[in-house]
Image (cartoon, rainbow, N blue to C red; front, side):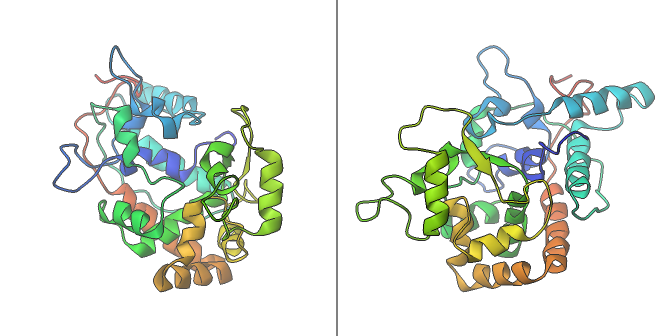
Length: 276
C-alpha cells in the first residue's frame, strides 16, 4: 500500500458519519459510502468539506478490481476499507489485528451528513456526545484519537487556535507558546494557501504514542486533541498511553474493531465508486 495516506480515520469515515440515535433516519455502519462518487444533484460524502483532502482511494479501487477477477460479488468495498485501515497502521509500524469481515456496502452517500463527523474544534463534551451516539465510550474516544499520530493537516483545521482565538487571547492559551509560534509561521493570518499545513506529529509516518506525549506538552495540533486533558477520565488515559505504547496499541485495536463492527449496508458493489 502506498504512503499510508489512507489512515484509520479516513478508512472508517463512513462509520463516523452514520449516527445511531433515534433522531436519524440514516442506517449506521461502515458501508463504504465515502467511496461513492457524486452524481447529478447529489453531492456525495467524499466531496463534503471534511473529506476534500482524502487521497489514494485508487488503492481501494485497484484491490476491488483484482478481487472481482478472482471472486466476483463476494468481498465488499466496506471490508476492503477495513482491511486497508489495518494494513496502513501495520505498515506504519503499528499493530495488526484480525479484521472481522462480512460488511455490506451502502447505496446512499450525502455530503450533508459529514457535518456529523467529529470536528477538530470540538470540546471534550462534544467529542463524548458524538462518540456515544455511535456506541463508543470515552476509552474508545481517547484510543482512536491516537490515529492522529499519522498524517498531515491543513491550516484550516487548527488556524482558529493561532489568530483571534477569543476576546481575551489572540492565541489559544492551552497551546505551547513555541509550538504556536512555529505554527503561525506555517499558517500566517489571512493566508490564502490551500496546501499549507503541517504533519500531525514529528513521527507522522510512524504509528506510535508520540501523539499523547505531545498533548501533555501542550503540543496537540487540534483543539480536540488538547481537549483530551479536560476531564479526569480522558486525562488519565492520555497519561497511560503516553507512558506505554503497548497499552495504547492494545486499546486502539480493541476500539477500532468495535468501531468497524457497525454495519448497515445492503449490497456488495461491483465497483466501489457506484452502486450496483
